Length: 196
Ligand SMILES: Cc1cc2nc3c(=O)[nH]c(=O)nc-3n(C[C@H](O)[C@H](O)[C@H](O)COP(=O)(O)OP(=O)(O)OC[C@H]3O[C@@H](n4cnc5c(N)ncnc54)[C@H](O)[C@@H]3O)c2cc1C
Image 1 (cartoon, rainbow, N blue to C red):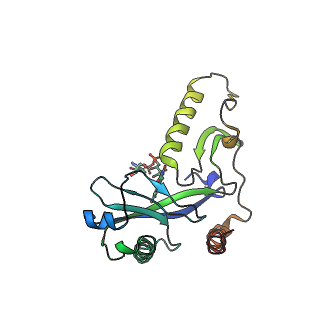
Image 2: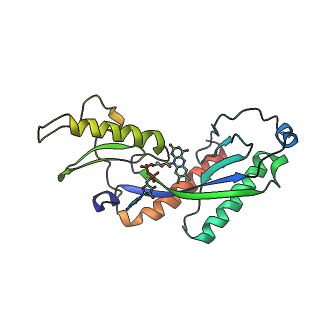
């Protein structure tokens, strides 16, 4: 990542697990009929869908270690979560898991723009784990913006949603970002437990 963005981005690990294919009896045990993706309504949420070959795919927040041991722990935690959410599937084996970073920002929003102190840099970032659609859309908008003007000042197109306009503020004391991440996730877990 360009160093100008480091203090504005908070990388968080996200992880996915996929079970072995479920039998018809196992699917019926939880009356599962849909392949539509879903997400629960917690602050620290799970997202999941039944894949066409009847494997349950579930994703959630991962550990802060970023090590192979951390990945193993998270897989085990996500496995336990499957058992809590769908008790009949508590012993269904996990066959695949993978992880990676998603980019959070201090303002919890994405940003498209030009770096104020280096106008040669056009950017789009901060998709908060929704980059498949957002990164694609942002890339197209930035390409149109770049191609659409010979004017050196080339201001940000006004049709873009207000939400993405303006460079993201830096985190205060950026070296504390790992602590902010832990504190933020712990706070949201607490809110989920107390349900507020
Ligand atoms: C666990 C997890 C779950 C996610 N779930 C969702 C979700 O449900 N919905 C959603 O919208 N988004 C999700 N995301 C985010 C989404 O995956 C990313 O935002 C999206 O893939 C970004 O697309 P990209 O093409 O910009 O980058 P990437 O998909 O990361 O592709 C970049 C490619 O460039 C290659 N590359 C990197 N550096 C070099 C180099 N120097 N030379 C050559 N090749 C290089 C990489 O190998 C890679 O193939 C998730 C991310 C993770 C980690």
